[in-house]
Length: 225
Ligand code: DC
Image (cartoon, rainbow, N blue to C red; front, top):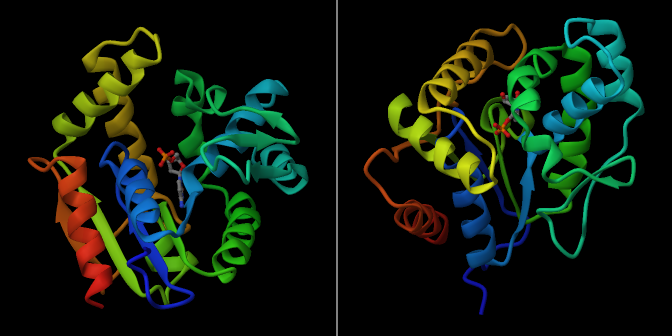
């Protein structure tokens, strides 16, 4: 039986790259019978399409146009499956090229405006766990619980390296570390909705915690709220 007794719960999970947000958010949503929305995947879809169309990520106007005309959907049977204009792009949006460019694309006001609009429509359907960078501060300021996950940069790089190697992509620890530091700095220094914890967020440092411990912690916070 679902432990979630209240209707229309909105749970926000934010934090830097590699803090374990998506794994944890997925586990929490599954445990509580809630819907999970990976907002990072949406920015990745735009970045993927920009690269596919040969557009420079620095070309704000062209990128914004792409964001406005792209249809992003999640397969209703398996939410991990992401579609860009009807094409399945689940693995393509995790490529090193997308990793390198997504923070540039995500900094544009027009891109954020379009994606935030979609995210709020999804959240209004109720019972959602959403992960990202600005969910607690901007997308869902009235969320019932706001979590901010952190971990040391070295630990986050080690986790990301493991994920990347599992997909058969060859990268060194140093490359992954540089990529993470670069993205953190762009995501937290941008003008629009920078990465930062909401004032009422609960901060959890996951450096020495296993994902199921973090998920359990969040489930108990939700259950006792
Ligand atoms: O969580 P992720 O690594 O898949 O996110 C990819 C990029 O998208 C990340 O560099 C920052 C951006 N992002 C964002 O700006 N706002 C969100 N709500 C989610 C992701």
